[in-house]
Image 1 (tube, rainbow, N blue to C red):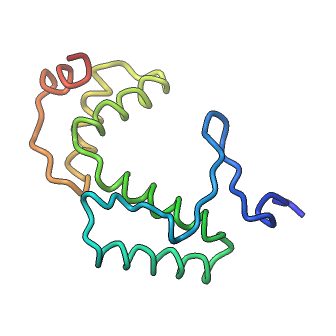
Image 2: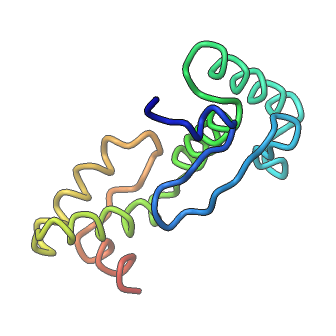
Length: 125
């Protein structure tokens, strides 16, 4: 058995993350910004994912939360996150700025066309 922890209904996180357990009823899908109807749909999505995959309800809820967080990322946060990732790959800042500009044009959010200087200011303040 590869994942005995899944049998117990407990999700064991990657290194540096906290271990947690959550029921569908206690799942918080950002209730401050999501209507009650949308929360019901998210609960239905969690149920669907748990039924149609090997995910537990807790894992499905976490997956939905992570997707929602990813999809709500603003351009400035995306720029900072991608800068760190590309820097870790050893790219020069000039190459990073060009790649970030290209990636922003393909993102789901409408980001303005940032100049190299604007990208640098977002990263370094």
